[in-house]
Image: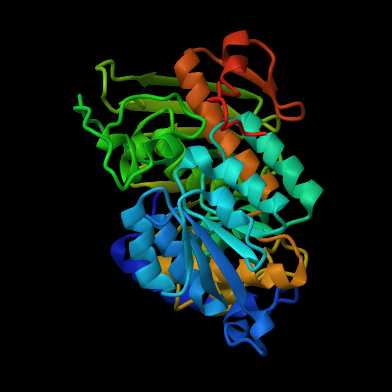
Length: 450
């Protein structure tokens, strides 16, 4: 059979959505491993069934995940280095919650069961490991790490402490992405040959003007392990992601979601590529956003599968998302759509008992609820279930270390500007001392990630 190159029209897409609902309803009853239903557990049988929650980093996504955790517990502690943010968070989520400026003081509290981490990327690894050592289960926003070396240490600490950790890659709890992964792994597009991920352009801006540090903001503590530099309002809060010191731009922002789904669909979520190459252009103005202006990356895996990252739509790849291409068909998926002939045929030929299946959650059994917020709720619900059962959550640290490593490797290849050879077993480069140095970063004294 020749490879399918066209995507459904708007009319056929409407028909596809109808048939997909039938298909999802059919495969939702297939016997396979379930966690306890998160929505049923939202009404606890006793006070001990509810989490006592400590929250770190309450601006933007931190407030989102806290809101989604409220059906499962009560906020007893709030931490943020911005006094205005932490006081507002207490007013919104827990009028009796104790507030902290330094998260280490919060972790010393014995009456916290679960810690939610919504701080900027450069703090994720250290906060997560410290929370695990304090005997708390953790929900940590993506990306899991700032460097590959951090990810290796995070996996060790989670194993050593036995804590339950869910990473906030909520696309793993969205019915569309789960369906795409199951169909690819079940061979519905034949042998997987290629994946293309379309993300988005990094934001440009600057030069920005240094200003005095606001009296309500602890700039030294916010910087953490990163270099101590003069305060710029644009370095903190939401726009931190456009500075390489604290994040990795779209490669680690959208990439932590989309590249995770790509590797999962390929069945390589616990491995990685063997070759990486990338190109990028970088701003040069001082005090300006410094992640890549234009970027492109290509990966090759040991089994021959290729993965390409585009920073904007082009040609056949005309919108953000993930395209899986096999030798008999292809599937495209993003946060609003899943299309491709294999999807439309699912109602005619449901999954069989021998097909790869992801363990079910509430989103799978209710296909009419495939929106972003429901997926986030369901992701938090899966975490709740696993804190009770002590099972591994859907976004475990090992797979998420591998996924964000893919993001980091792409950024490293772009910065080095050469084709790199990678050993996914040893997690080392074979041909570039320059790239090897970028697997970790120098850390400011007193804030080391260990």
